[in-house]
Length: 291
Length: 291
Image 1 (cartoon, rainbow over the protein chains, first blue to last red):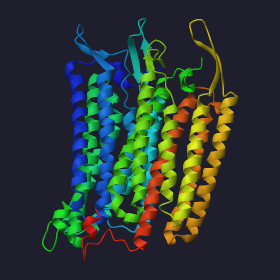
Image 2: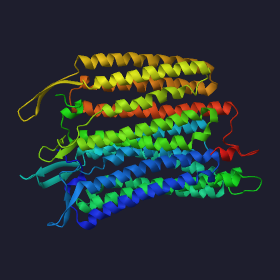
Image 3: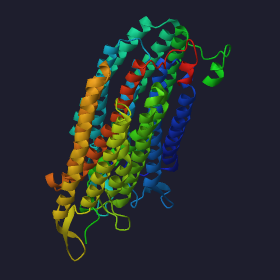
Image 4: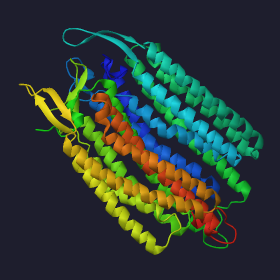
């Protein structure tokens, strides 16, 4: 039988345990803080771009909830053992599970991909087609990765008292599902690459430069996710659990928060370029109302 | 004695247990995220259609709460048994119950049905009449289904230690109440069918097409509910519990969130057609106020 996930194979020293807990805590705090940021800055861009900020808010809600529950799940799953001076599995509590993250990405990924389509210059038809591909490949990438992560631990040998004597990682289904997921991942990256390249040619001045940065950020931050999926293969010890949670959280902040802020920045440049005025108050109450 | 529901007859392996838990988690996250979406986009439609977004918000609150409590109820009802490597009933905790859902639909169903009446073109009198029928048949459908689900497990034979030796499913009351519920269900579907057909003739251009999509979405997503009600009859094992929770969640997202987004989209098209301006700022404060 499989244990519910790789994270439950180990005991953790205080530093390892708390690094995970603290990282998840700063993660959900960033998401809630950014949620307010995106709501409060929504009117700095012209109405036609505001849907990008709305989608950032949607992503922040989802990311906040999931990081909050991951943190709670982590803290509940283990207890401090004074004799061993280690955090060990609390048998009475639910084991820690990473799977929550995966399914929650069913919200985030389509939204993050959709978001960029409202910032670049694109025909309605092409937007609809890209949206459908994003929804399809994005969802397939997540669902197949989700199934794969259940097979992270392929075999556990236990002693008489139920203690873990040995385990093997990553059986065949882990790699097959991971490989299928990666195909969809590359499809998404390919579409984003094309969108960013086109946008850099067409957007006015500074917006093109920022769009280039968004492209780089997208590639770097998204590649952290398969890295985290495979992390137990690089280091089979407790430190890979810590490394994975840090990697996931850094990736979440980069691909959701910073990405959203940069998209809003492009929208601001384009809004000014389109003649949208947020800052001025002459000639009426517009400025004040707009706050 | 009957066990409070079918779900409590089984032990679950890690994958089965977590698929339910993860699905419910993504479900309530979607509801909270969509709640923000409907609030933040309310001014993209003319004031006369905004009540539809308000009703979507009402539905999101109700659906968020119920999925959150279903998830908590699921996680509390079972505990990890290290020796069996299974999640088993935690005798000290409340058994899992699906009944929460049913009664909560007393909020959602009338609101979802009412919502569409503010988007289509309809006389005040006809709207009042349809509203009354919707409230009546919608509520009766739920209450009778709610009573029926108590009879899902009709007989349980237990051994000396209280362990379940055998059980039978779906006694006569399960089918009688289910059949009564289905009559009201068909009445609701018939009314919706007529509304959608009329709307497709009368609404301008693209709005008619979207209304057709709403009709299809409505039929497909609403038929998932009786499917979930009957699920134990198709597969008498633990997988039908997983299948049922996934089906309920997919149905909830489709019939509440996607339905609400599409209704708001029809409202946007109609708003533009009526001359409502959200995007422009010249000649007044509309654009700024509209945020």
